[in-house]
Length: 155
Image 1: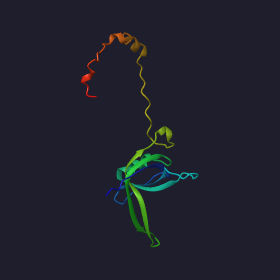
Image 2 (image 1 turned 120 degrees about the vertical axis):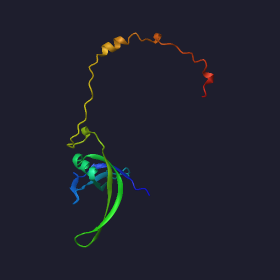
Image 3 (image 1 turned 45 degrees about the vertical axis):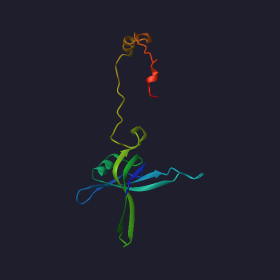
Image 4 (image 1 turned 135 degrees about the vertical axis):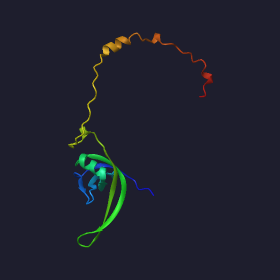
């Protein structure tokens, strides 16, 4: 069976990262994912999907992802149940995140991510020297090739 979820959306709040009693990191958060299809005259609909990530993925998400940031996640859909304090059985459907990615550049994000976009390298080469060195390469300096034998080509 195949159970693969790939989603892109914005975080509705900062991720909540906690530790289990065994010391394993677990992050919970929610993504707002816009639907592609809207009926004429209606506003775009958004689904709010619960996510959970474990171990190093949880640590990464907790460290670098912030509310409002556009992210992409890969994982699987899981359903679990529990009994609440009133004795009612509750069901939860969530995506267990295996991989998480930044989906926008820092310039487009309002997040306070510690990553910075590297600046473009600058080159100090003098282009005038390059043009002068290559100015003697003219069309006459190249050898003409005779393609009269085109009949041997298979196309």
